[in-house]
Amino acid sequence: MSNNNGFLPLPKGLSTIAIHEGQDPDKRTNREVVIPISMTTTYKQEAPGNYKEYEYIRHGNPTRDALEKIIAKMECAKHAACFSSGLGAISSLLTLLKHGDHFVCIEDIYGGTNRLFLEIASNFGIEVTFAENNVDAFEKCIRPSTKMIFVESPTNPTLQVVDLEEMGKLAKRRNLMFVVDNTFLTPFFQRPISFGADVVVHSLSKYMNGHSDVCMGALVTNDDKLGEKFHFFQKAIGAVPSPFDCYQIIRSLKTLPLRMKQHFKNGLAVAEYLEKHPKIEKVMHPALPSHPQHELAKRQSSGHSGILSFYLKGDMGASTKFLNSLKYFTLAPSLGGAESLAALNVLMTHSWVPEQQRKKLGITDNLIRLSVGLEDEEDLIADLEQALNNV
Image (tube, rainbow, N blue to C red):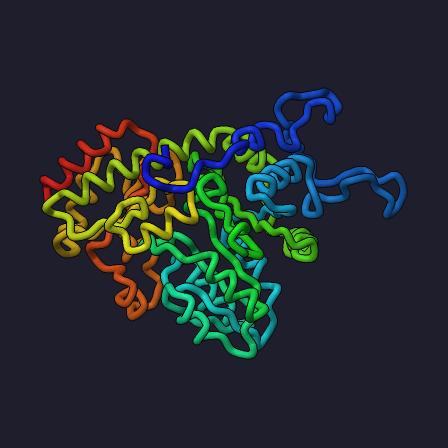
């Protein structure tokens, strides 16, 4: 499907990985085809301090271990560590830094991550500089104390695409850790490690789970030392997910390729419809030729998810009227589920971003973000049409 839009070929073998990696029934006591949910928090020891594979749930769990093996393989990496949320994963990542360290982050980023960096990391003496979306801007922000480059691609909510290969080269040249949040595209559409990323971040709550019923995050890496540290963070910090939630995501990953193809199809159809509508100023979707990084998106990804943003002609009143008129698009934060969602980012996901930064990024009263779900395409467009007629 994505080949029709000029993107990279879809990855081969991802469905097989999701269904079979680390899930051989012959390696389980009762040969269960579906991985069991191991709910115990502690394990009997043969003698004091002498235990087999598992000791305590923070240290490891069979269900969580299986999920981590699947995620690592899907990202073409060696190691994955799951945490109780995406922000929990990023918070754990920040413990690699110490007082006086500095990092550079792309300026358009999820509001919760922005808040974490500005209001929490700063309390520990860790400084962040927000940079525009180009390598030169990032390089100008680098100091002797800089340790890390952190980006989302595409960004939230204005859908900017970062040149991952060039950013990876910069990080390597300056001996910096390069971190990419891959939540919007998942390994089905983009694999940042192949472009030089040292760490890939996921909010598994979104597309990787895909059903709006699990909160979880992950850190993925090919570096053995980082992989060891990430698992130490699970043990020391304790921000680990429950075995049942891990089981749910294992279940969901088996349909990830099917879901992502449909999200891409529906999202692009909605974007093309909105771009032609007289009440819309501008649509941001990397698969649209009008997107400023459209060619870059095609070079480094094999498609796009159901996320798009647009500017409605009008003010806060028009935005509110439009959003309140929607029937199939639910007014709610988050994204990546089967159901379509709509958000007014200035009051919802990015309300705590400093006002000056919001204005610079274009997060205004008429910017609306859609997470296009798996409903019938015609019904979604009809819903948008009737809502726009009410504005």
